[in-house]
Amino acid sequence: MRNENRNPFKAYALMSTILASLVGSILIGIFSGRWLDKQWGTEPIFLIIGLFIGLAAGIYTMLVTIRKFYSGD
Image 1 (cartoon, rainbow, N blue to C red):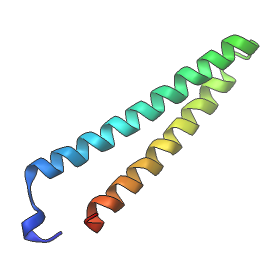
Image 2: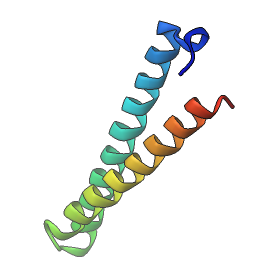
Image 3: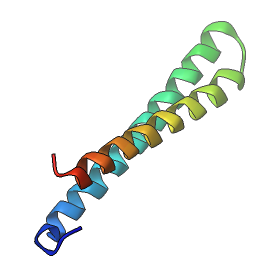
Image 4: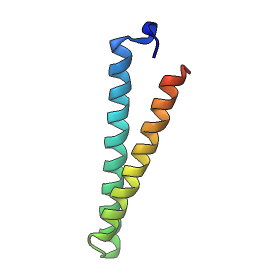
C-alpha cells in the first residue's frame, strides 16, 4: 500500500466489512442447518454442513473484499 492510502478510517471500514461478512455468513449457515435438521430430523448433520458452507462463503467474501480494497476499485 502506498502512503497516501494509509487512512485509518479505510482500515476500519475494511475490517468491519470483513467481520460482518464472516459473522453473517457463518450465522446464516448455522441457522439454515439447524432449520433443516429440525425439518428432517437429522440432528447435527446439516448444522455441521451449514457451518462449513457458511465459513467457506465468508472466507471467499473476505478474499474478494481484500482484493478489491488493494486493487483500488
